Image (cartoon, rainbow over all chains, first blue to last red):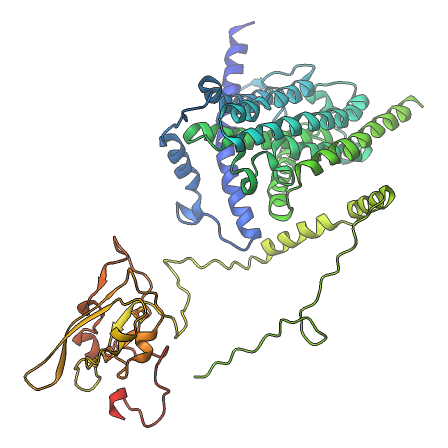
Length: 329
Length: 205
Ligand code: SF4
Ligand code: SF4
């Protein structure tokens, strides 16, 4: 392993960390603005032009707030849980190609930290590990609302891992590779080649599962403010709570990238236009997360489980069987 | 200025705009439930919701009042912190110290002190309202025969304690305000109905 490779990788990691931490902050700004406009409000207005610096104000607030560790919590686990959420969210980013290859200063840059051949499996696996953030944080909090939230997060994450895994199986059978770059190149021919046309059911299923795995609104019951306060985040304060937040928003961005790359052609043939198209697609999926939050009510936990096991999972299995049959004959 | 609130008939009937919402009976058999799921899945109700919020976002019909910068007008009958008014012509205090307001106040929060001055007029030396107890019922303004104690429109009050007294100096219209015409006649609770016989001051008729 030569020095140049190590340096390049470290630079890439730092860039991704910085960019997506900042984006997570900006994401909260966009979320507030979009939700406000959809509800005929103005959203943040006072800090900076159009409230843009609200993000900075929140950052300062989160960093300087007292870090309260309540008396009865299991301290080491309580302290480590937010780190798990944030860390796993960013670790998942390692196998995601954010941009096609380009050359800068005569040096070829692959904007992916590690093009491993099990890319998507790695991404899904790490996102599944993210379950331990809410689960451990909620169980260690010595608070009944956190405990309910921990139980719910375990149920939701594990159920919807099944859906996202099964939904992805069909497209992966067609592509024959787990690397996100291979999946992207499979659809390089243009809009007609996008997997969403041949696998619409898998696309919808994976999209639904993405909502559950990021804990966004129709499936927001892990931290449902109106019934269990802030769920696993109830006892947290300051930057530890902020880490949960960054993790959630980073996850939203990464899962948007994953959906766009797997189903909507990613960055296409790797041209600059393709790259910007990828950003557009990702923005749409991110926007959709906010959009549904304004429009749709939350479902009950039992409805969520019902949807998962009685509707989505059979559909995913049928989809795989049909895909397999079509590929065989 | 007469304002008549139209009577809203909230009883459900043929004429009223209120009606009972149709609620379908819940399905009982498995097959009915299945049909309901299918119907709801493909009816596209979710997209109606998405469209509604998107439409509002595109119309950008923002209803926010950015409060400290812009304020909503308050109604003439709004009962905010009290004011003691002065006579327009002479600038004397309108209050004649009759004590009716002190008597009628149901929270017993008005305190006043009077004396006979050298012109044998009754003079109000102290007048205070304990805002910690005042319930802003408006009885004092209604009972006052001279329109002396009225409710103002000042609703932005900051104080360390709610119970801080509203003393006479706070409520009484300052003389320079009177001369510059800043004393507004009270159009709300207990106010006179304007007609030709009333010129400037209620006392004049
Ligand atoms: S508004 Fe009512 S409670 Fe307040 S001082 Fe007048 S009479 Fe008393
Ligand atoms: S009722 Fe009016 S005139 Fe009589 S004491 Fe009270 S404020 Fe003065």
